[in-house]
Length: 293
Ligand SMILES: C[S@@+](CC[C@H](N)C(=O)[O-])C[C@H]1O[C@@H](n2cnc3c(N)ncnc32)[C@H](O)[C@@H]1O
Image (cartoon, rainbow, N blue to C red; front, top):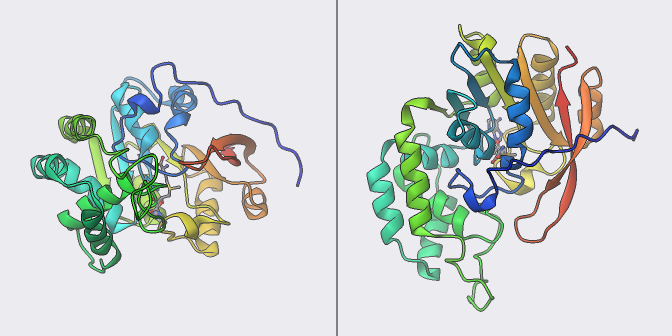
């Protein structure tokens, strides 16, 4: 494949994993792009409501930093995975119940198996507080943060150096969830397919002052990591919407796959280096795609 230019990611002087705003851990989470995104947000009119939309929000690492730092006035978080959606909704709309539970929940293997079974056995079609809480519990206690596909921190026998509670700090999580609730009116949450979400949002009256940050599952490895609602046809349909010029402001990150390069060949593509694994410090190159206009 041709060599593309590299985009250096500026460091955000105020933000590190130590003071992340999102209560989620996410493999490949994009909080580290906050300074770059802040720069790109200059296209929005500061005299109008500035909106930041994440159609594949996952842990919404970048959106929450930009909201906390007042770079935008509102964020729209959307994820098609009902378990992820339920976790966000439980935090945002049943905050006291959520915090009570996170402060009293046991951090041991019996509890872990319980939450794993809740998440694995879920086949519902609407919001469920318990599924949301269990999803969150699994995210904070599994080795990679991947909700169903990896084991507990410290191993099944809990003989590792770090134990199941290593990433579950009730004080800190209470603050993060409490902050979400205080900012509830600035957060819109939906559970749609990303394509429908983008299509509907771009038709809204304030679409011209909305910036879409789009971080879909990988074309190559998406299904391995988290819920993957993207067939190849959908990856193509997403590029049709974005390259049509009907979405005014957007930035896209993807795996560096031939299909992605092909679909976005008319746009500005560069590579960025992403710390992908939550445990090993594995780095991968991803593509950054921005409109040429
Ligand atoms: C790469 S992750 C996003 C990570 C996020 N940017 C962060 O910083 O945490 C992709 C997310 O897209 C969601 N997803 C997968 N297919 C989807 C679809 N068709 N529509 C909306 N969300 C989808 C997954 O549930 C997952 O949370």
